[in-house]
Amino acid sequence: MSSRLLSVTQKALGFSTLQPSRSLIRMLGAPPEKARSLKQKIEEYNRPDEEVVRRVDIGLPSGRVSDRTLASERSKVLAKVKNDPEMERLAREQKLNVPLETIEQGWKESGSASQHLKTIADHYGIFEHLFGYAYFFPRVMLDVGFVQKDESIVPVYRGNFVKPIEATKAPEVNFESDKDSLWTLILTNPDGHLTEENAEYVHWFMGNIPGNDVSKGEVVYEYLRPFPPSGTGYHRLVFILYKQEGKIDYSSLKKAGPCTDLTLRTFSTLEFYKPRQDLLTPAGLAFCQTDYDYSVKKTFHEILGMKEPKFEYDFPEHYVKEQIWYPSNSQSFDVYLDRYRDPCEINKEFIVDRLKTTNPFQKEKKKLKYPLVHLHLDRSIPSWIRRRRGWAEMGWGMVNESK
Amino acid sequence: MTTSLQLSGRALQRHAQNVMCLFSRQSSSASSAPVSTKSNNDALIRPVFHNRNPRNLELMTIAQKPEGYHLDRFNVSYWHKLVITVSQSKVSADIVHNNGSSVVSASTGEFGIRKFLYRPTDVSAYKTIGKVIAQRSLESGINSVFFDLEYEEGTKLAFLMEEAMKIGLSLEEAPVYTKPFRHTRGVPTKPWDIVV
Image 1 (cartoon, rainbow over the protein chains, first blue to last red):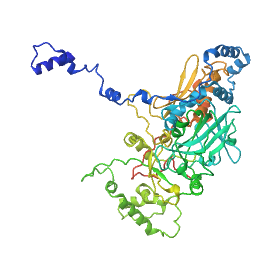
Image 2 (cartoon, helix red, strand yellow):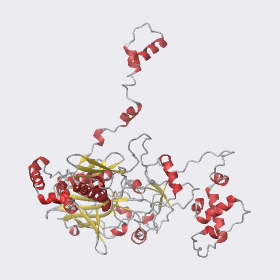
Image 3 (cartoon, rainbow over the protein chains, first blue to last red):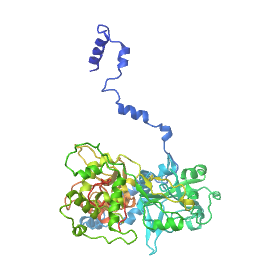
Image 4 (tube, rainbow over the protein chains, first blue to last red):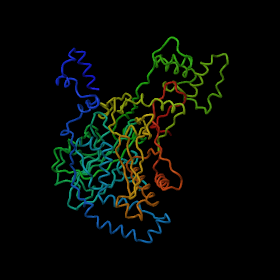
């Protein structure tokens, strides 16, 4: 292929009798089967510098014993299981009941829990949004649960759903630790900032926690219940437990009382962690997701003292074909023409129609179950008007935009 | 669940046709109603809110699902898929995201599970894996997954799926919600609206 192309080029350039020169071949480039495609070239061009984007492990070292050292012990256990006649009987009769709680306990102790937790946290973009290019394996297992009025517990695992009404009080937090070690626990929401891009709200900050007793720690920020505004979807609430090297002075961050000014609650985990990285090591992680419920309205009004903001997802507009003089009659002419009318004008029409029958100073009439039964329209009225009236009664179509 | 998906049949049909052209936008931006400046907190609320949670649009059922190609052997139109791998020495279940990464996993190769089983691939092993993968995925905020493998009743796989469903894992993902046309018949209800 390439040699033929070469000869064609040579003929065109008028030196077919000459030997093909090396420089010409170089000018033509590699043959298509060997050359990189445009897609590959763009990919290579856009690839970020590996030194810049390389992720750094900032967590505690793994205390895990390697599989090889455990192998002999494990094979003994498995041999015992294999020679257990009772277990064989249960397995054959399909009655072998495996306790899920025990499996979970073993999973946490074996260290695979921290691997799985890191994987799912990456899937939820936790490290990316809180620590940039740093990550950590959560070596200390956090046991977080919101205690309810009826003393049931709503747990926080790694992305499960918790409603704001269930999280009105600070959760109970447990973890394994020595008595004389010090810890810091921070609860942040990286998704809910109302005024800034790429910022977090700190909902709870406990510093210098002695042992695993969170209540004895120093309160830096008091607990503030989550407030995901309506229409903004699911917010992550991330608990991060740091191990301290010694006592840390948090007086510069400390806020007295229930800090309800949201500007003071603005927080950045990376900015908090960077100057203190020699004193703090992230050790534990738990997170849940929360979305709007009616208790959020109360939080905005009573605790934050502000109007409740409401958001709506901004869908891209539908494509509308250019209007033509003679469209196909597959659809009604009024539906076709409505596409090109000003929506405000259409809405005004519906509102004026509604106001003809209702008094704005009185309560609206109760909605009928079958409104079309009560709609008596004369046959002399054109069918497209009758259809429009019927749709408006049913609450279908464009009438919804005027409400 | 306080949210529900109510769409008329016609609307569903339409949105199935238009997924690709309608959902080119990836960020979940939203515009707000005007807010008065009553207190300190009210000031400077952004008119556009950006939720950084990468799973948010999937949970709101407005994220794209890959369409795949007509001659693809497997359906790739999902957000999370349950994949079950069987070998001689173990049974594994993984929840895989459509970007290809395995997010949640459980296997009888894990010593913590294996030590309670007589055999790593018998019926009780399948049942246990069904329970464990369902529990782990619910704890990870994945309540529904895509699963299109066909199986007969009474097979080992059927036992696995049964146990997973008992724990509460739904084997059907919600359809993608698309913005209805203005002239669509029926009452449009968004999946995230609270229906009393």
